[in-house]
Amino acid sequence: MSRAADALEFVDAPVAGGALRVGRWGAGRRVVLGVHGVTASSVSLVPVARQLGDEFTLIAPDLRGRGGSNELPGPFGMAAHAADCAAVLDRLGTGPVTVVGESMGGFVGVVLAARRPDLVERLVLVDGGLPLPVPEGIDVDTMIDAVLGPAVARLRQTFESVDAYLDFWRVHPALQEDWSADIEAYLRYDLTGEAPELRSRVSEAAVRADGAENLVDPG
Figure 1: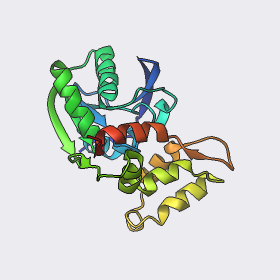
Figure 2: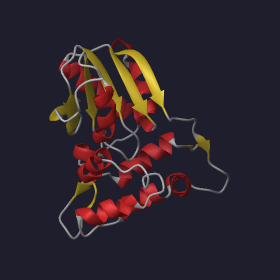
Figure 3: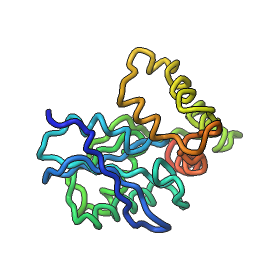
Figure 4: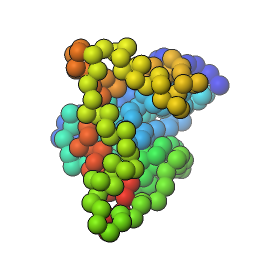
């Protein structure tokens, strides 16, 4: 165990359609590429960075449509995200690396490994799963709403202040007993806009496009 992840540095990497925001922690020779989940950002990987030794560097992009990359246009989807990750690693001259993919990030990691095996030494897949079949008579958007529920609904909400957004999350059953400085930093990073109309930086269009490919099986 070593340094805290407060030596966070953000850089912009050129990708198709613009620039991808990339977080970087540490300066070790062993590189880990962290890929976050469907409505998350690179800052969700700060606790992972904190657990790495000094011999590691963690590179974590904000995927297209999230965080500091929220204004990047589509197309979205696993192939597009994998291509963005490959562009980051190519630009940094880094590879092969360990890829840690959480939830949707695991699918991105698998596509990256399949298409650019020269960049991937090993895969660590966390909290993924197989696509869900869409019942007959149910459209994909309805299925996405059923699967992601409040995670999608909150992307349309506005908040009058940062504290209001934090309070919105403090009552979440999963966070009531485990609130931390890392969670608060992650949530602050997620916000954009001006009070009293702050909102999440996650693009609903990106979530729906990725969900149609990844969370369900449209046939």
